[in-house]
Image (tube, rainbow, N blue to C red; front, side, top):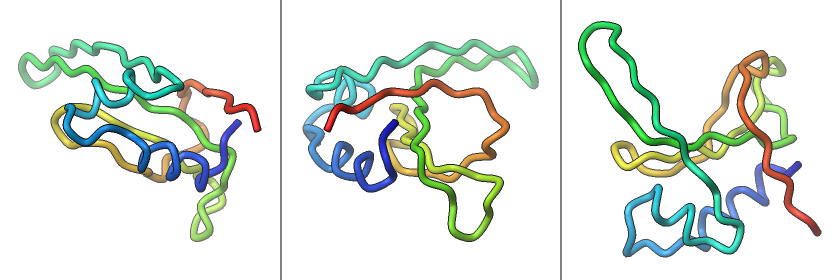
Length: 93
């Protein structure tokens, strides 16, 4: 499971001429994204990816860092509640 630093390095290697979901899939690791449909409070569709790191948030030990990306808010490293169920992508050293 990647560290926060490994996810940052991966994110910084992406081709910025593409939208974030396309950048993720165009990378050597081919990060897949999924489509979400929600009808709560209206109709909403989004394609996004969210993957865990092994690194715990220094300010809140109940959280881990994630790589998150979608075409609306871009791609970034975030801190998420570790109880949430998100996928893991292994990176070989």
